Length: 178
Image (cartoon, rainbow, N blue to C red; front, side):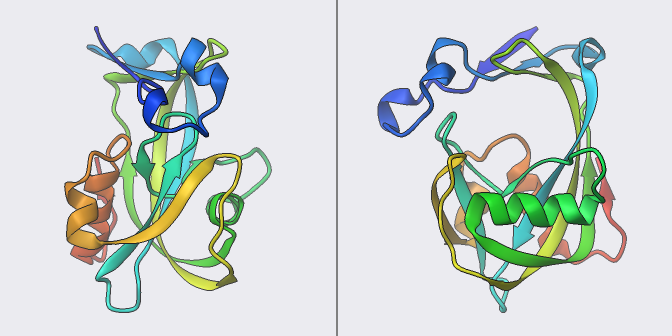
């Protein structure tokens, strides 16, 4: 199995959580590695400007990587409620879900958290539009800003977020399933 450690950029981001440096979240790749984890449902939100020329990214506090806003769906909430909550918590923006753009799962990818929990994460990606709020930061983010879409796709983003942005841009009526 191949391991990718998140938290290795601690020297570049002084606001990272110290627990991440001692035992960072890591992603393990290997044939059907996800079998070792519990199935978890996550979401990401793709928020473009009106002309779809820029996209909102946040910088994670735990590892310094840029990513789409998102996180885990909580028990008792719908996937749209979870997506809206995650965007609000991480950015201060209120959004409305426009459409499902993709469903992403990788049976060869296992996420191992600092507390030892292991997860096979299935991610639902939604294109959203802003309906209110003011762009800000949270304990989970150290930066949030709109990047030119082409630049964002070329960045070293968390997990498959570049692919998720490309898929949302495609404007395909049916969601991608990957």
